[in-house]
View 1 (cartoon, one colour):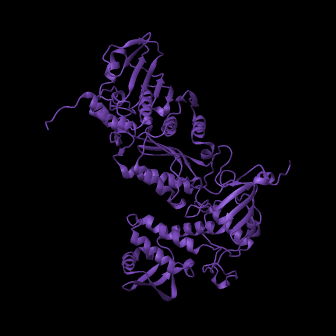
View 2 (tube, helix red, strand yellow; view 1 turned 135 degrees about the vertical axis):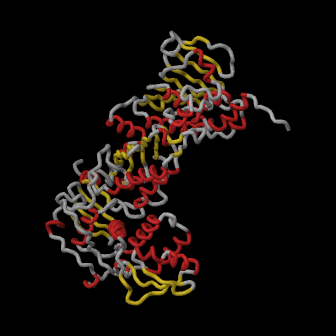
View 3 (cartoon, one colour; view 1 turned 135 degrees about the horizontal axis):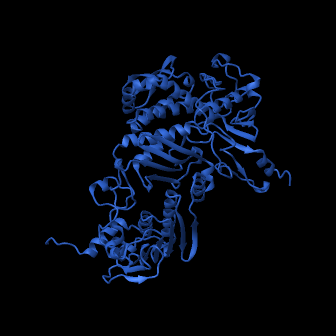
Length: 608
């Protein structure tokens, strides 16, 4: 078969396969062109999910009559003219493929007017006739009818009308979040779906975010504003307690361009790793600003992926900024973890994940200090935990020496966010009273977070303290697992776990952290050996260590049915107020919730 040059129409249709994936992709290209043209107002009309009609009209600079046909020529663009421009792309579009690709698979009409003209001009895709005069305001209108009418095989892969329109709607909401000064309207089958006015200052930006992402997101969001050298990060990140079952509230922009980037996604997952279950997803809206010369946007036909020239620096900047911000948050019942109770006592329902009813700022406290004076961590909990089913008091000799908590500190809520303890419920929950009402605390989850942060602090100082067992214990773990544990012997020793190889398929445990001395050591070793065999986090030493510490903290934390005294409960509350990420345990479960007094009144119909 001889080599031949493909016809222009076929070339454009092949390119359309990369650029025009579905109607939402057409809308994206047309709206981004409008933004590059300086549009402040964009109107989008959709019919049949975008397959029947896509009409995008803007108030931008417009296209001159002499350039209308050129706009439908492949690789024709006004946005770059040299390699230097390509290396510093500052516009959303630049490849010159979108319009001719879209025109090749639809019935396409382009109408535009520049300020110097008294009226607009219009051309039809595929028609070589001169532009026709048309009544039009300054700006551009693009009409795309019968998408994929000449490529039926492609059209068969489209989803239901509602599905395709949902993609369009989500896309426009993402674009609205990237430009606060943009006004937009959206209609579907003649029905108005969206009407967003432009906003300006920071307050207006927050209102736009609440309008697009929902008030619950803003009620649980922390403001981000970090800068380092050529990098700046701004936006909002939600508290770990506002996690999602799907990544449907994740918006990330690089120099105003919405992107999906594995590097940035990994940095964000790591930032939340200590406070969110692996099956949950964080919610965030982040804007990363970087020198255009340090990011390559020409790596994907749809311009949805980027590549950074200094990827490690960008990763560490994003991870460090978000991670430290989350760790600075202290329990603040006025701002988060608040419970909403239904109006009717007959159908009272509690939504643990609803935030306050209106956007509120968050108080981020400085790291660990009490009345301005830093002090070492002291735990009120016994070194040796009794089994779950045992309710007998722990022997005094087995209790860690702690400073008795003065009554003035434990029995007066004062400025203590979590208030003072009242009672213990079902051996699991602590009931406390603060100025706002009732606080419920999961004692195990809260203690687990406190211990975990203590372990991490010990590790940061060098190693976790270790206590030799009176008699070393042998455990059978399997030959492969024993090999892996032996290979990581030194790393485990830094975590307070000292072991030796006892045989082909067994290890000898000689020392553990004091809090684990009476825990399920066999289960701990089995878990460690499984993690090593699965290769979990071995390539990242810090993550691997924290994973072990989290498991150790879970096993050392107070168990259900452990009777606590009021001073012990108060001491845990004070520890929570000084502990990083105290709002959730190491697995992402909430440690406390706030029920305001008015909510309790509503539950019992008081005042009605």
